[in-house]
Image (tube, rainbow, N blue to C red):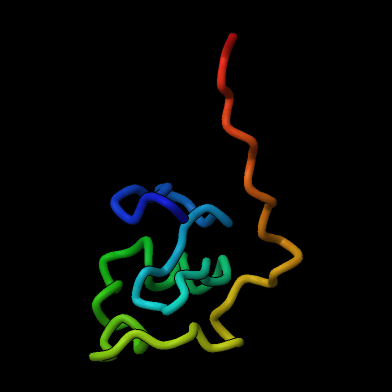
Length: 75
């Protein structure tokens, strides 16, 4: 969520939609069909002029989003 310039090449809970406000990961099917394919520009949400919450039918279920990991600080 902290890095809008990086995404995984496969559907993942770590791929966030930054056209949403707040950013949220789309469900895996939506990522396969739109986000991670050549048809990303035809995504109805991508084409919106203003950012808004990601619709429920596109959102990855909250229970599947991993908790943030503690950052390693070393010794």
